[in-house]
Amino acid sequence: MILKSISLINYKNFESINFDFDDKINCIVGNNGVGKTNILDAIYHLSFGKSYFNPITSQNIKHTTDFFVVDGCYQKNDRDEKVIVSAKRGQKKVIKRNGKSYDTFSEHIGFLPLVIISPADRDLITNGSDTRRKFIDGVISQSDQEYLSTLLKYSKIISQRNSLLKYFAANNTFDPTTLEIYNQQLHEFGTIIYQKRAAFLETFIPIFIKRYAAISSGNETVSLSYQSKLSDTDLLSLLELNLGKDRMLQYTSVGVHKDDLSFDIDEHPIKKFGSQGQQKSFLIALKLAQFDFIKKRSNVNPLLLLDDIFDKLDEKRVEHIIKLVDDQNFGQLFISDTHADRTESVVKKISQSYKIIKLE
Image 1 (cartoon, rainbow, N blue to C red):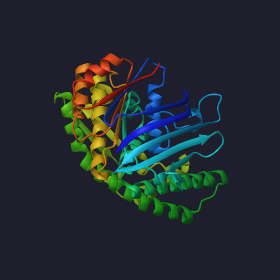
Image 2 (cartoon, helix red, strand yellow; image 1 turned 120 degrees about the vertical axis):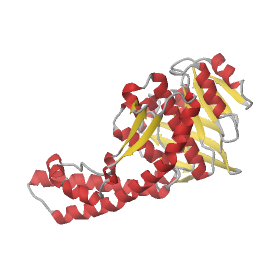
Image 3 (cartoon, rainbow, N blue to C red; image 1 turned 135 degrees about the vertical axis):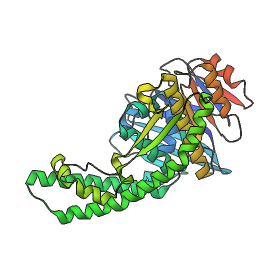
Image 4 (tube, rainbow, N blue to C red; image 1 turned 45 degrees about the vertical axis):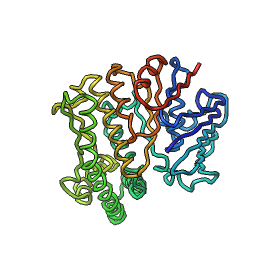
């Protein structure tokens, strides 16, 4: 899959601009604040219907304007594909493929597979479990529409159950029959989600460990593990066991929406014991493993976006990462950096064609 060109209107700092891309490597360079990351985010927007950095749609519209349009032309499986994402203040966002709007955004997820590596990924290590769950869910959803559909149903039932718990507390009442209906649905959907996450990680973890070893030259041992209460018991039992707690808190305190991933280096939490370089390598290995997994499931080379790749990594390690993508297993690559000469000196060392896009 190749992104041939992109057109931006009123998107973030851009009023109106067009870019044509090389089929292999595209280096977007310029000083801080000129919009390098915004171009990568626009490409991300075309794949997921939202920004990677700011999910609030209105905040992606250029100041003093009322709408934005991101228009991308792709080549996928020998077919031309045109995808447009547009938004107007106060109105619902629209995603169109070849002129036809989607009924639901979830139908589009996975059509244009993409992996982004960014300094913002550090949130995966530093933030709470919600960020790590979103990572797992995002990877699986790109190749499994049933999983995404089940996840959306589960989230809806959680919201309804929480509203019911609040209603009980506010009105000093309790209806076990209605609650049992929600519990049964959560058990059904939650079990599917847990099983799919566990199966995914069984495949994903060995890929991740192999990728980290390649990036770090095997100097450290890393591990990744799935933390879920469903590994010990079923969700229905958990919900019944925690009913008193849920009624007191007025929300659902157990379930797959509380699952987490544990990130360790040399058997210690990488958040506390990993250096900045080790944490960065961990995250890059995580994202390259994501690339491998999605490619295997979809039989399509995802787009790979490297935002500010030199951040906290020395040039030698960056060169090693670029070499990893210098083979037929990778498709189109987008790199942003503040130093054009530094970026070009690295990509010149590999055999792929490339294009330097300089932003003033």
